[in-house]
Length: 609
Ligand SMILES: [Zn+2]
Image (cartoon, protein in one colour):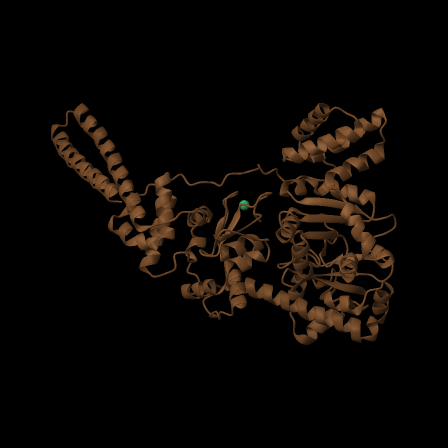
């Protein structure tokens, strides 16, 4: 399929944006030599092997082998389509894209997403106006005041109000000519079960716009003003909203998370707002869903490898439940997670209102790690009688088994052994048993994500070392390309992936296209990764060294050809094929001659260098 955006536009966008900035928005990067390093957003790791090269404008993970350019990064990490990444980066860099050429489906999808963003923005505006300037919003305004929220924070989080009535928003859309089917796909209105037409999803509720990383409204939450149920109502998942990837307040919190290398994770909208209002601006909310691996990776990108996540709960029971649910994720993503439980009867919102930030911060600094928290909670629950200690061990064996890190595991075993006075070896045995069981049984109410093997080595291509070396050279040292062409090196490369990359480089060079064009994202995942890997291979190239590499390669190939010639000679002898044998022997003599000549040349060259 032909692509609708001209290559030169892609190149223009690439020239105008810096991959380090784009990646740096979601992955905390630190300078390491001429490159930048951070924790890979595509696999779990505790020491950074994710590398971004500003020179080559590429990224590569030496842990999992993921790699590519700025477009592929956004596609992988944000789940954007290629046209979307182009559009996003074009907007960012101010490159103007031509309109025509998109396929109908591409146009429909991207315009649908844009239309939903736009509709959400207008809806947010309408709800805000109702809260601040409409008499119908007065009760809600009073409610917020009574909960001690200041206008400044209400404005920052763009709170609004959906008044009573079934069709305020529906009628507004009708007046403005907004298709109601679109509003339905945006999750703003619902089709009537009986009869025709639609009605508003949110009625008589305070409205919390849920925004993405970049501050665009992707969904809404609504809270009632009294005790009626459901207390909270959220938008359904839509084309632009996935619960498992969204965190409330992240657009405001992210820069503060980076500065503090710490994030507070709370549950509700008001909890997030209360922390922000009290100066703890590095707080985000999970909005009722359990913390997912995507959430944790998203946050890890902001707090970095030495960062800490503090989960705040309003009771021990809630903390224990959540700790059981999420310990596997934290253990495998190598995030230092702590559990902070507030005094009985308090959530972060009411706690802040009553005590302010200082005691909260003091508690946070003493917050226990997830595993010690679970051990202490189990001891609290079962006591230290003989039966109690056995129950404690039973409770914590499974969560302990989720730690692949032997150091962490042995630290916790020691901690538990001391607390319950059970032999370390016995504990280890219990953990082994728990690890052997299917994870679903071992952790109550939570299915653990499939266990990734630690230290997955990057998948290497089957090509020989020298073939990889040659293609890396072609990628990194274009001066050598005329020689590569002259000696027809690419045709001698055996590995199909390496050959494909080699051909692409030569083609692009001939067409004067930057070697790292869009073609690479069409040429398949494995190829793209291999190319990124070879591009970032740390090598210093100079012309003479490259020539030697080429000659050595040609020589090896000729030797191999000679080898196969020997086979054919043997076969001809066996078959008594006199005529064939004669020809082969002549060929053989010529080859031996050639190899000798080449070898002599090599020796002379080495002498000169
Ligand atoms: Zn990785």
